[in-house]
Length: 333
Ligand code: RIB
Image 1 (spheres, rainbow, N blue to C red):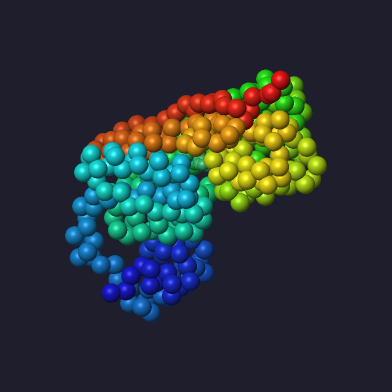
Image 2 (cartoon, protein in one colour):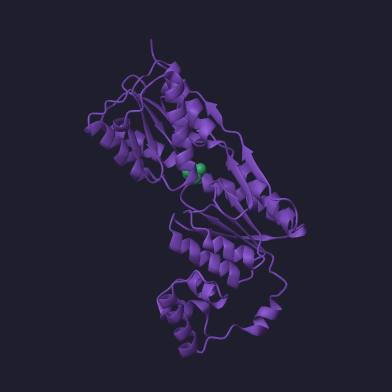
């Protein structure tokens, strides 16, 4: 049987594009739409009406589309979703977009094609077309962690800006004056919010915002390492660092250890995310903890409610972060 994926491969487009063309969405580039239409005809693709009818009642599957399966924040968050899903009689299908919008589109197409009961997604970009496809098809969506501008959906976030502001203010209060920031990709709301918190704290303290002390990376370990190396090699001479997520904090620490930089006497460090080994390393690591499991649990509850009450008010939940001060940021006498 010819599938939507066969059509996508034959036309050289994503499965999500095929789905948009088949659902009559007008935003698709006419040339792409033509390729899809030709491939549908050439391959003899027919939506399987029988299968569709059999699946008219949605499955008991939830698609959870996360941005990085290697990041412990997301796996802790998925556990929170799963505990609610199983309690409510659903199963979870884990999809890793790898911060790649094309991969994300394909997983959304799969959720549509397989008639999944609902989708929980941490967006890897600001593209909203694919999420709109789900909503137009009557598939409930809960957005977690990164905010999407556009479709009104149930959303669960944490107070990223306040957490970053607390971290940076703490460093100022400890007496540090050349505070560097390693941020995430600027098209993601968690990156921009945390960077805004860093800037707000400097402004409140009357400290200048020095671009030489700021780097933007990819929320991953290698990116954190390279950003830290750049700060050191470019002579920015920071006396403190705020790294805006767990994996970039690890990368920055690796670089500091290799460069034999003493923490905190040469450079103080504050990370972001709950980091289970923060108490095990020396010096212990100051970090802004975010409740990953609770983010997932609340998202699971919102999806359950949406499935039983489709017309319920759209809900936006913002959970608090917590600055956990440890030795890596305490100025030594
Ligand atoms: O490390 C995970 C956290 O950093 C999440 O908030 C994710 O969005 C990334 O920003």
